[in-house]
Amino acid sequence: MKNGYNTRSTQKAVKGLLKEMCEAYGLKSDIEAINTKHKGIGKMNYTIKKTIGNETLKVNIRFDDECHNGHPNFAITGELYEGHKEVSFGCIHEEIQRFFGVEFDDFIALHLSDHNGVPMHAIGNMRYHMGIGEYNEKMEKSEFCTHYRITPSQYDILLKADDETHFYVLLQEMGILAEWQNAANNAISRLETLTGTKYNPVEYERSNLVIPSADDIALYHTRKAEGYYSQKDRIAQLETCVRTLRAACRETVQNCKDALTLDWDYDMERNPEAEDGWKSWRDNSQQAVNESLAVLPDDIEYDGSTNTYLG
Image: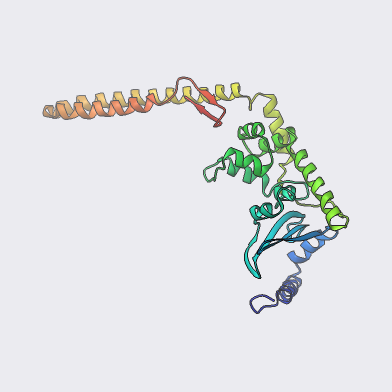
């Protein structure tokens, strides 16, 4: 009972109402579809308490599909009490480590990861935390590597991925997916020992990992074979673009010069006294165009630390 409401009864009533509405329209309710997918998903929960002085910490480790995502997740949370008063709760991992040291670090590392050990929204969140894209929240490299359980050298390679398909292939080729899976298998085995139960795995339809289509992966391998992702080839492509842009700018500058000359000749015939004003306007315009042209690089160099191309 919370805040005067019986949560279980409320959920049951909502599910029943949803089912009736869907049946009335000849549809299958989402709740029913989800429950069908979840049949056979194993549940393992382990709880332990420890008291230090006036403080008591209750730790709950679970591996289940409590959030109805279509696959189980790891989660480790805590409830901290001072005497009988709860003072903190949730994913208070620093408090868990304060009480238990490194005993549950394997579960902390896997918090919200799925049965394959894949972190939540793996590729999208990883690119977001690398600072890729217009909207991002870049993590420090060391924090990123700890959070996503990769090495600094793997980070450097992933940072150079051109798109999500390329990113996925790199996760696979560098063995990161296999490392994540191994960590999950070890944690499941340990949780079986702690709970005295046996995990009943099934083939889940969903995962934290969005796998690119076969066509997208085939396109990646085609591009790789053609040198699309190589540093030398990418620099050559960029230099070609810059040369094309520079030529277009030069053409625009010449067109401006021609237009200025025509306007100058025409205006001088009609208003010779405007010569000084025309000269100032022409010189300023020419300077602005030249300055714009000057920012285009003659040569391009690749900066691997920031995954940028510099002129």
